[in-house]
Structures are given as C-alpha cells and as structure tokens.
Length: 210
Image 1 (cartoon, one colour):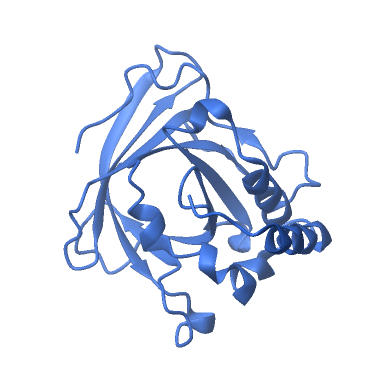
Image 2: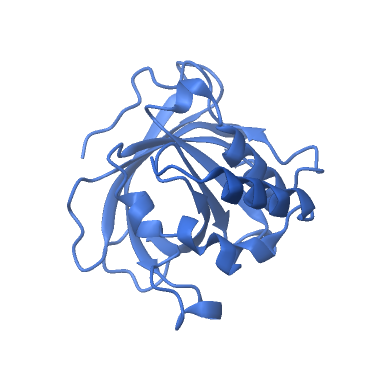
C-alpha cells in the first residue's frame, strides 16, 4: 500500500467532510483521479473481492442477493477485456442457493474528462466478451489494497454505489478512509445507504475458480 503524507491526508479528509450527501462531483474531480485507475484496481494481487454493502437491494423472486463475490482472472486481459467469475446467494442463509456466472469487464474513460485522464476510470460489464454494450460502473475511489467503491451508472441517475473489500481484508471491516469516502459519495444521511450484502459466513463454499 502506498503511504500517504499526513498533510495530504488531512486535506483529503477536510474535502470529504465538506462534501454533500451523495456527492457525485467527486467522481470527476481531479483531486481523486489518482484513486480512480480502474485497471490498477482490477490488477490487485488479491483477485478476490466481496461486495460488503451497497445503496440498494437486489432480489430474485423475493430472495435477496447476498454474499456477492467476484474473482478476476490473473494476467488474462485480451484486447483490454477482463474475465471474472461472479457468485452470490439467493437469501440470507448458508444453505441458500448459489448462483455463479462468468462476466467480462471492458475498461474505458468517462466522457467528461476523457481527453485529459491518463487512466481508464470506468468499465462496462457484460456476459459476452465481445459485447459492445454492458452495465456501466465508474470507480469513485480505490486504495489499491483493501477497498474499491463503484458508482452504478445505469441506475437511479448514477447515484447508486457499491463498496467492495478484497478477500484478505474483508474480515477486518471497512477501512476508515473508505468509510468516509463512501458516506460522502453515496449518501451518508440516507438511512438506507448501507444495505448489508456480506455476512461472516459468506466465505464458506463460495470461492470460484478461474
């Protein structure tokens, strides 16, 4: 993990405290560009991550999606496409039905500063490797070690968020700086902004192979 000078961290936290609930402007603010390299995040040595909480619920036939897990393939980008396995359970029990699928992520730059950004900051996710369309996600913040925070671009006018923790860090909970960014970017004053997805038993019999 890259060490952050104390003076910069203090300034960074001050900016976050002043942000309004659900502040989407930070997604494109140059202050955060260094934390928004989505390919660096996808290339994390710990390829396994868990959706810890999000601002919305997802259900199938009345069963809530829990234990959402993603494993990115190692060193397997083909034409700028990342293959990964996603798994989740339908319900809140260890015995709930498990769903597994292979997905493909294509990184790109969001339109607002596409000519200025050096690194891709978003991705399109599809079930087909050569798809020209897909569900859009924008990286709000990554510490490139433990946590990644994504904006779901195609829902709720781009206000929905997801917070992922990598497998080696998930048992320790959300790091304070990630908690702060998530709260300010995703609506800390809304009682529903933390919809629990991860439970302590989720790791049992969930890790896929790729």
